[in-house]
Length: 331
Image 1 (tube, rainbow, N blue to C red):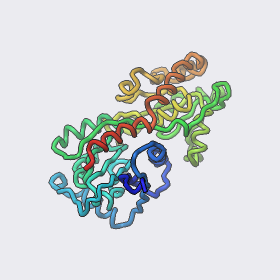
Image 2: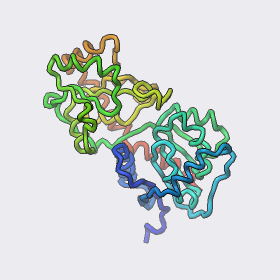
Image 3: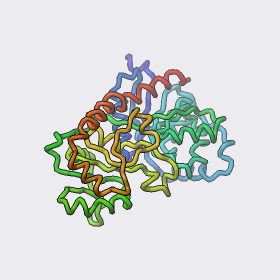
Image 4: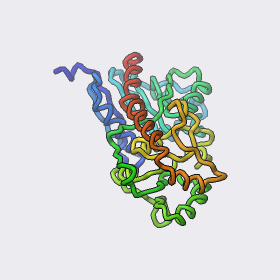
């Protein structure tokens, strides 16, 4: 009987099986695990042609900022969606049945801002939590009159989902996964090979390194160094000026790997120190070999990063903040 009195928290989720949606499932599992005070239920959304057409139509309207919020009912329950960019199909029809809608948004690239930001009001979103500080600042600057409030809330993970081996047991010297930054890769691939280092990366005949999360986390736990490059450097045509810490940095830390890469603009602020070895492009090959030769010198940094992720950068840390906002702002 007690559950019936609780406000229902609906976690809006797509049924797609894309690999990058593992982060959403991990986030939702943390919410379900938490002692919420809500009756939590996942709502699986299917993407029919009508939903896709409606959102596509809305993005093309020249008068998006003047659209009035659409609401046909008011049930008092809460809808929460963790979404990639402005995939508002997730919000249909749930957003029109309650005034209490909240979004956690990844990858809101600048070329989409002109329609993502005003549609937050159309879909009755009370608060949006952006994974990027720069996107949060853009939103405040570009749409200061929006009813939807925003907050910067960096990505996170659940550390129990990851594993690690003792460093002397690891067999992968350098792991490159995700976005391949050819300008750097080409500088290190032959030197690592000439010194018989185990360098794992995508090749034309191996475009998918890991078929699932289990094989991916196993590889991380078996790696000494992980190369992490923010998207504004590896793919500026997509990210433009947005430089932000992504899940890949945290996953490497949770697996007790040393990160060699470029520091996203918000990461030093998030951690309070520089948690990676920053790439020296003018000396890339000698640098990576030297780091491997003196790997034990970096063990204190690896442990510091692991403990910081464990204490401050798990989804339960983020959910505590979101839940407080919900309780203060919901109608």
